[in-house]
Length: 482
Image (cartoon, rainbow, N blue to C red):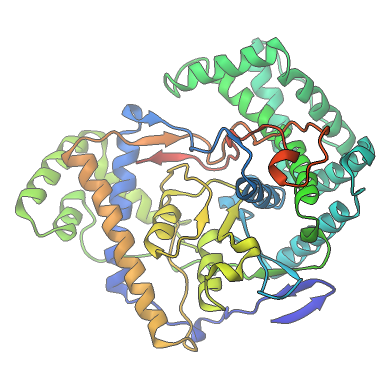
């Protein structure tokens, strides 16, 4: 570790390929062939797929749930760019060494440069300090406190918010079947006004009608001509999510003021994209199936099913996935964080704030991250999964300087995740299990809260009313899911 400034510390990892222990090409092919095959199957069957929403608690009075919501809300306001491969997707863990008062915020992002990580760390530190400087008693705060925090959040996230505002107008005009406006002004003041009006709208009968209509349309098909309604609802709630996040920051301060006093911010460098997996052998569905299992019965079932899908170009989809110039797998931020903590101090409860082993991410976890956390068997909690399957995913690097068991652990994790991928493919083909999909990798309805400031009780539960957690939160590249 090297100190870069007051409270901002970066965690050094190797970015030199000479310092890494690469995976054998045989292992790479063994992992990505069934993954690409499964993705192609999902894409072929998406019209028959079932739309899902990640499962999050609807209400909570549990302090741990409040803490976890605070952490992923903090991640949410650090995920500043929409699209671009999800490069700014961010994960955060809150650590506290036993007997040490200092709180350590450790974060990582999917694909940020060193300069971008430093800027994010500085922003996070400033945001936490601003929350800490808010009046200690909720009744002493005024609208200006939230406004200062919201403006800081909007400023950092202006690129993403600009996209939201333009999409909001486009989808609203589609729903109203009218001409689009000549332009959208996305400056901060106008954005604050939009959010304020959207907050009022969400509480009216019209807002509730939009919500019901959007949910009904989602339950039919994504090709429905009324798809503008769920898209409109999604954009409204994405914009409101920033206000909700600020509210959670202030509630976290009321519950754990120490989180905003003596703290430091650490970051882990993003992984380097892996070289595009290439394969000299045949990449047809039939040949891949033959390498996935040695059971003749399973091979026959798979090949018959694959033959049916050739009418829809299954082999072409597999080829397209492999030839995609963006097929450069990276380590997703939550897995990056889990791996670093594991090898740098361990994952014992005493390492984490309040003993709560949790890594919060700005988006619900993808299918492979969910599998990785489960198979890691360390009981570290994470956000619920949206179930989307991404081929641009890989396990963490192993450094030559690490102990021999690090390479063994990586192989164990690769093997465990492969088993899960193959099982998904087998279930889809043998049991005709329908895939599922989510068009956005975020959830639509942001976790929100309603405060009742009438009690002086000390315990956290009595200081919060009902906090509706319908974590329908983020967005980015959606995809077929299994």
